[in-house]
Amino acid sequence: MLFTDRTDAGRRLGVALGHLERRDPVVLGLPRGGVPVAYEVAQALRAPLDVIVVRKLGVPHHPELGFGAIGEGGVRVISDEIVRHAGVREKDLVAVERAEEAELARRARAYREGRPRLPLKGRAVVVVDDGVATGATARAACQVVRAQGAAHVVLAVPVASPDVAVRLRDDVDEVVCLSTPSLFSAVGEWYRDFSQTSDEEVISLLARVSGGITASEEVEVDAGGVPLPGDLTLPGNAGAVVVFAHGSGSSRLSPRNRSVASALNRAGLGTLLFDLLTPGEEVYRANVFDIGLLAGRLADTTGWLRRRVPLPVGSFGASTGAAAALRAAAAADSGVGAVVSRGGRPDLAGADLSGVRAPTLLVVGGDDTTVVDLNRQAQAALRCENRLEIVPGASHLFEEPGTLDRVADLARDWFTEHLLQEPS
Image 1: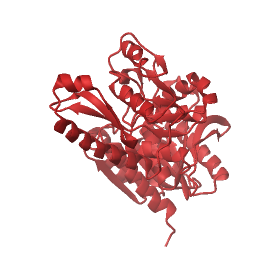
Image 2: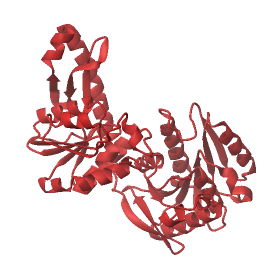
Image 3: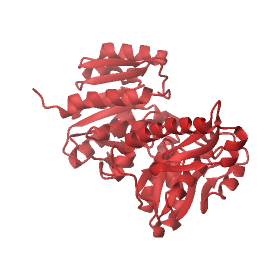
Image 4: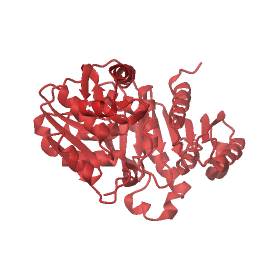
């Protein structure tokens, strides 16, 4: 079974876990990749969501071999057999545990932002990850959950190594796994998009279900008479809303766009992610690169959004979506107050670049040299306020650690400055 991304996997897993809804479960995601999956599971089960923060205790000079694990609340699970066979001295055990306790506390504070962890005593608990290869982290998490008082422990993953899935049944009351392929080497090979989950996305997803941010509303966008699915998120203090235009071969479920959207939500900006094409239209490759068609859809969607939400509107475009965003913004009645392009092809907007009046930020990866040159050429054609930001060490998809977070920071600051601040 192949999953589109973690959101797709979480929604499918949520269906498979439907029998647990009557047990009023708590859903715990393993940071970071397990949290987007767990978020969808929690939504499906109408259950509270939290993270399960555990730290493996590795044998000194052989850290990949774990002699135990620790969790919040002072939970400590130690394998006396491994300690004995590995010859771990008491002082080394204490030193490792202290170091891991500090990191555990730091991560828990960062993810929850001061919110208390959910109590598990007597509850049915669903531990969720995006997949299981060796099972070491999942096993430690389930043991910690049990030690924290959970009455019924379920391990839920989209995909797992078949032999590991069998072994894990000894640690939990129930294992729910959608796929156990016989030819298994890595979790990521069973996802079309397995890009890194950022800390920012984890924090935002937890904030949504805790009341910090209104959960996304599934909407049907009217794009000039064509119904298109979308996800609209409006923080309680939203001062503006940003429409996302995805790139070729992507959709509203793009994990990179969703990560950036999460950062914008936390800054008080609403977001709308929608599909630019219908499933039937996506079949024809030419439509993916039809900038005129995409720009028209984006313009119609922006108009629909402005009628529904009376707030300033910005556009965030990726790849070909950036060209569509700029072409749509060039219309005299576009109503777009700011544009951000991520790894975009603004050159494909052609002569319309000179008609863009909205302040425009172009963000490109430093290692994406061809696109850097294309953005420089496009920047020269812009007549509006604009800036080109090159993120060092980033490739076209910003998959390198920290690079997508930098994109999110730049976009947040640009939209905040040009959409939220009162004109002087």
